[in-house]
Length: 581
Image 1: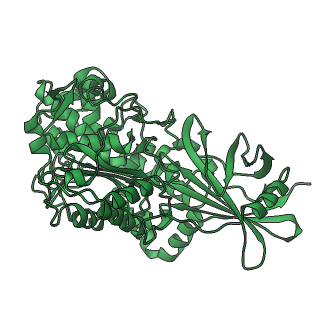
Image 2: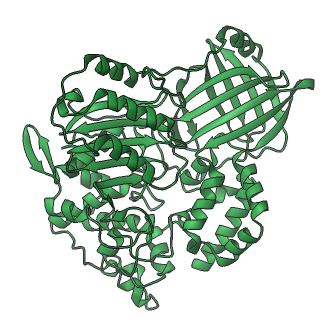
Image 3: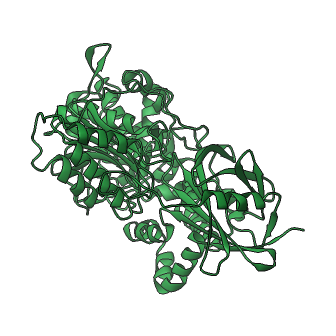
């Protein structure tokens, strides 16, 4: 099975690097994201920072540093102390009212589910997976794979060969895990692998007889005031477990507070023990493995000097400081794929170091500035010295005339090979298209509409002029909330350039499309995306070189310049088009 998977990897990577996206339909495993994700949650009590011993001025400075943090690209933040929200904000067009993909932060929720199931006597952490999934094992299954226990899954110490990236090529991920075997004896050492968490999700469903979402509905979600949770599922219909969960930033903070409360939550005025306190204590301390990182690892929680955290790639954090009784939840579109020690140093600076105050006098001026800032932050816009966010000047009146002049124009694209979705999202969602072959413009109802025409389908986005317009993009059964804004400017050659920024407001990705209008009714289309896939690809390969066949790694190392060129071509494609008469 593993040889077949490796052959599929070679085929997939070759087609990706050659931008033959239309040939990747056989690797689709969706639709996964079947609905948009608006927050449906009871809000937490909000108070002034000073009433809890925090400074409004310092929180303003924290947001300023977070906005300026190179490569972090914050989307939203919630700061809690003593169980109450002292500050909540989002960088427009992102919103705390829209649920955001949490990526691997979902692992900690699965861990809590394991703790609940253990408390109910449904499982023990010492239980072997061969006893839970006996039909997946055969006479040739190795002793090592038969020795895998739930605790090895929780601590990322199985040494499994089957990785998250392999799920594109295998329908039954439990089967892939077991048949892929292990690289070492379980419990021997740490290696981060999201499929460990998927196994936890699968065994929870097996043990409880219901989906993880259904199991947690009455035990965790509803008591915490969280409704209608979307958790993406595998081709076998199980929650992905280690990823694919969408939550509002305040909902994320609730789980940090739950852990801070040792698993207790106030329900109808009474404290209810939702997760056993003893499990929370075991889960949030390091289990002693060398993670090769600045952080330790517990039961699907990362541990640090002053506390612990739930973390998802591209900058999803729930940071818990027990001594300070503080929870900080962050969503972002960071270029850093993994947890960043500099983010923790920043939160330490503002919320741990010399911050043992219980009460501060109200600074009404600073508080008003903070509350104003919370409603005016914008993605990519720096915070000025006076604590306000200011965007660049833009001649909207002149640009509007140029928007109107595009009405009815259609351009045919040479060599279609690019999707409207960022490459990272295509891979994460298993959602590929054959490429855009026409670009059509319509100006209606004070907005520019752009049609991205493919062979079998057309995707339309509504572009706001210098201010994002929210809409829904449906692609192959998946639904994505997007916010789109456009600007018409001129380049150094005095050519008109239409800049379209697409924010996938539930996701970590953005897509920038520049349409350069040239002579002879021709256009050049330049695309880019964040997070930057070329850097991330290299980092992912470096950290997980065991998951790729050696011949692939050797070839990439030998032909590094060519691979980098192909990656740049993939993440920042250029297309040409000519007007259709």
